[in-house]
Image (cartoon, rainbow, N blue to C red; front, top):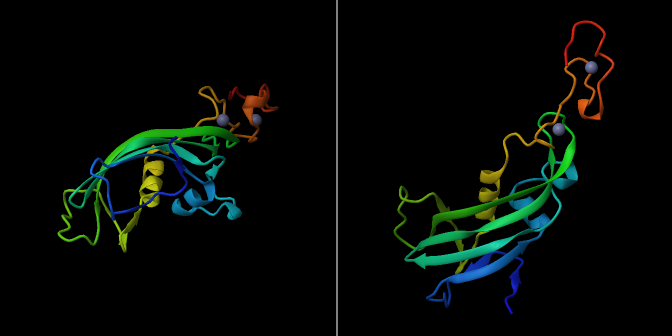
Length: 171
Ligand SMILES: [Zn+2]
Ligand SMILES: [Zn+2]
């Protein structure tokens, strides 16, 4: 039976020739920290579940190819009506990074450097990057969200506001 990792720290020591395949579930507090969010301060997105996914790692020299997918449930804020709603963020990723401190770093060819502590490197910050790459610029609570009345600020998903009918038609 495969175990699910709750951290993304890997050691170069005894690295398997065939690479590493694993499932993971990063707890919300760990991911929040990597995302540099402070849930205590009410910073969004609020993560409602662990970030679950699969990782496939292949090492060639100091270049590490990182492939897989993730999914996480979170509380989003609708771009139109500003109401919080529960959404799901998921994505596939395929990136090649370089393990830093292993010699001949090749600055141009690769998108990132992963620091090495002893023989251990942590892919949590990279997962945070993948998270932000998948982040919806304009999340909507539903595709036909009616938004807020520009005059009185009422949430028009809950019905027409009192501005309607009085004065020029706005809605
Ligand atoms: Zn909305
Ligand atoms: Zn109104």
